[in-house]
Length: 624
Image 1 (tube, rainbow, N blue to C red):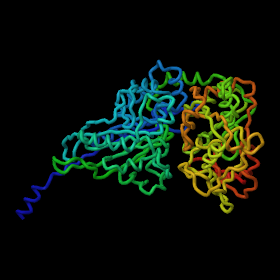
Image 2 (image 1 turned 45 degrees about the vertical axis):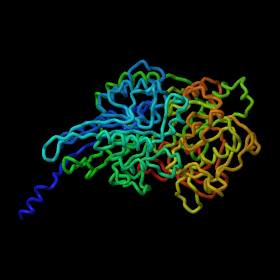
Image 3 (image 1 turned 45 degrees about the horizontal axis):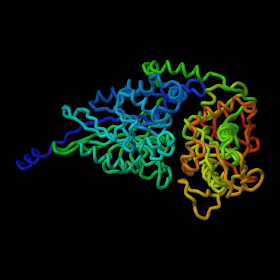
Image 4 (image 1 turned 180 degrees about the vertical axis):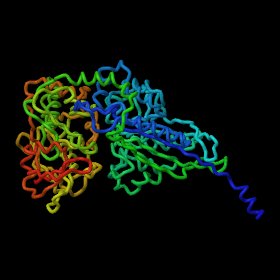
């Protein structure tokens, strides 16, 4: 007995405490619940709603003696017309998002790729207004001296025996290296981007040597839903597997974790919220969710460090009834009113209505308008130059087609006056019009990559999905100036990572230019965007010698200019593509419930409404 008593007395003392980590990501300037493109209250979340959830989560943590930290994971300062107006027209005014984040007392923020969309100088002005540290471990620029490669946060927590202990939390951050390509007109020669995993490994080792008890990574990237190749942009799984990393906050893809969005990923436990056993949270988009990670920590004796004994990961969604924090509403009110006034200005007129409800099933007037505006802009830019005689084509994607952003992510315009907010709704990204020089052979590959969005259809399954849900609409390009047919029964020429698959002939047929078969050796000029020219969406990355026009003309400005032309009011859908005839199969298209009022637009596809999904999409069975 005495020996046993001595053993118990000499046993190392185990100390336990708890830490709560709160996370937001991809806020995209959604400070209040208002849809500026539709000029009406929104149907989703807002930072003002999240503020209510943050306050409640902090209060509960305090009651339980838990330390509590709040982080944001980037894509913060771009995304709504309010953000664009401030960045382009009102840079002399304080940024309301910075004011909101200061009010919420974030402990640190990371950077996302879209934070660079308005340039380094404008980003620097935003970051200078923040009262919290900014971290990015794989980026550096003399223009942004406030950005740190790593950060140490010291906080206090209460132990299970009523004492107070110090916790040292190391914070790292990363964003896709391809940001250097997507924003190269802004960052070239002014910024340096490193490979995320290499930078995180280095900085994790450095922050551990400084005494970090835990390492948290704000990784502005998602969980890859498919093999993205050697330069994949979504590397959460690899980050979570790093030995020195304890917690990961994800983003970028606008998906949610934990939850069913990532059921196909073997290493992800979508119920527990872990990847390779590491706690991971990804809190949606546009303030849809608050990520909450609760860690049970323990330390054995005074000489050892803290370890995670258990973790709980959850998403707390903003609901229709979640009240908005009146303080944040007040902080944004002046900018909100000014934005609505600005967006209410009439800029043109439409003779015919247009919508994007069926843009992935049949050519739509919305991308046709965008493509025509790009062509109009480039025609003016090359007039009188050496490129004026090159055949000019134009490209438009289909971003307003639901997808990850839900059944409200569609555009519908009535005939009559067009206002600025309508144009803002056509292009939710801060893209610029560029022109690239390419060949007929490269155009074929461009189209084959585009049609990756379609599932491989069979004739037996009446309710197969037309569109692969893993591929967002902004990756689908139609090339105007060509005509071609798509056969979705064929397997695609490229895999999901954009790599050519040997032996596959592809899906695009009968490609013609001016009524004749496309000559693969012929040179063309293509009006596109900076994002696509930079390889965005797993497309070819064009080199500097192939980029003919990069005058930094915003796409919204191009559309506004085109609305002043006499022809614009008559814009209808140019029809560059169609599915091959007599496929003898059917498939389900997910679209807006409002689409039932416009089924005559696709009467040739014999649409059959088949009810609503849990997310609120209308299911249309189409016949090809």
